[in-house]
Image 1 (tube, protein in one colour):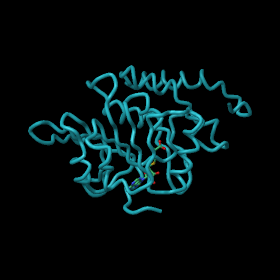
Image 2 (cartoon, rainbow, N blue to C red; image 1 turned 90 degrees about the vertical axis):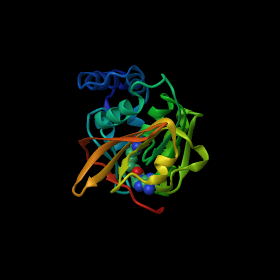
Image 3 (tube, helix red, strand yellow; image 1 turned 90 degrees about the horizontal axis):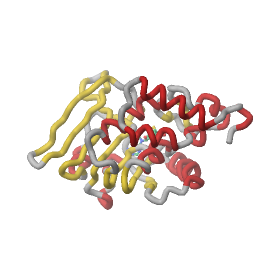
Image 4 (cartoon, rainbow, N blue to C red; image 1 turned 120 degrees about the vertical axis):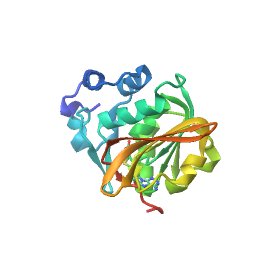
Length: 219
Ligand code: SAH
């Protein structure tokens, strides 16, 4: 516990959940996940005091942990009108592992990929004390998805490219849903939701967002 920062983590975390609810977060499972996972465990000790503010924070190697309201929006889109617990979910961009920890409470299995080895290892360290047996961290380029876990009930990306990679759509189960940022129009990154139905794919382009770039290869 970050006693030096004077944080009563439980109370501060519940206050964060109340703010997310006030901003429109409805899904009870997502609320519960935010109330459970200690975000301060995923940021550098110097940033612990800001861990429950609605702000993105640097996690090293030029990457950031998204602000809670954005993560809440992504997870709610992924889980809305679906079974209480999703099946297998693929996350592209493990980063510090925070969203993977949230997902572990919302689905049966989480496969989370990270292309920066140091971040992948950092996430492993962050997650180890939480003992979440359904989180599988994979070091590799998420542009290719992760065929071994497919088909997925959900795919969620924390980094955005120009398009949604075709393999992600192929790895989505029929009835599954993908939530990812993409710059479909140059200069404007938007949140994109794709549903796979028995008859094909249905794509919805939502609000403008600002995620880090989806990069190919590993580092
Ligand atoms: N969900 C993360 C957010 C991390 S930011 C969290 O809770 O902390 C997005 C991450 O996507 C970065 O760590 C970046 O390295 C990673 N990323 C970008 N392109 C990628 C790719 N092709 N495959 C896997 N990870 C990728």
